[in-house]
Length: 104
Image: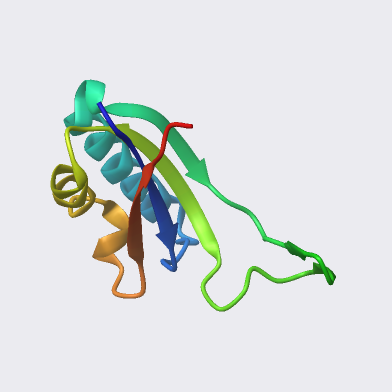
């Protein structure tokens, strides 16, 4: 069965401890709903750097990675539907990029 990466972009990190706990609960609930389709719950990402042939830049580009998750589902459509439940989408600035991991 194919594997997919959910790459998270945008979103905000709450500062209020009660709100942090609420948001963590949303993520944990979503992970539980995925059941055995969840392969790696990944996690949030810190500041990113871009490495290219011309050097290293302290920047993740225009839309830096905020986090990731890996799932195993039957096809792209199922992965897209699963991603629609992602808590980062509750924040109007968040999005999920869904891409298949190709076996080599």
